[in-house]
Amino acid sequence: MKSLVVIITGLSGSGKTVALRAIEDSGFFCVDNLPPQLIDEFIHIAADRKYVQNVGIGIDIREKEFLSNIEEEIRALRGKYNISVIFLEAGRDVLIRRYKETRRPHPLEGSSIESSIEEEMRLVEPLRAVADKVIETSSLNPHQLRELVTAFLGLTGAGFKIVLMSFGYKNGVPQSADLLFDARFLPNPFFVPELKELTGMDRPVMDFVSGNALTKEFVNKLEDLLFFLIPQYRKEGKSSLTIGIGCTGGRHRSPVIAEMLAEQLDKKLRLPITVVHRDI
Image (cartoon, rainbow, N blue to C red):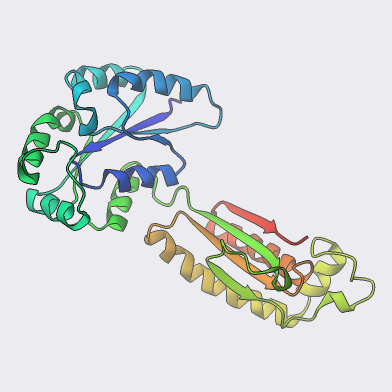
């Protein structure tokens, strides 16, 4: 099966960076501002890397000197690769407002923003003509644009990752955590002589923690909360969620809770889940 090559192009200020990041978060190997004449060579080099499956490429007016034969270039690429071209545009008034809000100069640096936009529309028309999808972004916020791009490519929900991290509060809270839950109220195996030197990855400790009625209730409530929250985070465009589970030392209770949650989330959500036991 051929790798998917997605070309993101369009008018400056229409959301190309947002779109390119959306597919990058879905696992694409992306490069921005690549001259069209180098695309074939770039894809060929990327294909030799086993970790590169799909490629995303940004093309815009900054490469105007290379756009003269763009239709022929795209046609040639379609004969060799699975190419999808997405063209983004927005109304003149919207583009002018966005430039004024960001206070960034237009890449063409004409006598005015208005004249630069008009000239850009003329120059990128060949790209628009070969696009598989034209998206008008005037009324879209970044989250909605991400949704449209990933849905068009069949990537909706792809690339979202969950990290469950157990840790010990005495060693500091993980700065990368999006959500934190405290398990220090649960019975502590540290005070059981035969369990003290073991960890939450050892069966006796797992049985001790998971067999407690309070643990089961705690995990059930966390599952309900996470089953509600995770779809909301995905909808808002997050590409990953790090969930911290803490106990005192990070060696007994929190690793067991993290493993229990990972098993349940994997069964019901079918998303990539990584479990990290920071302090074991």
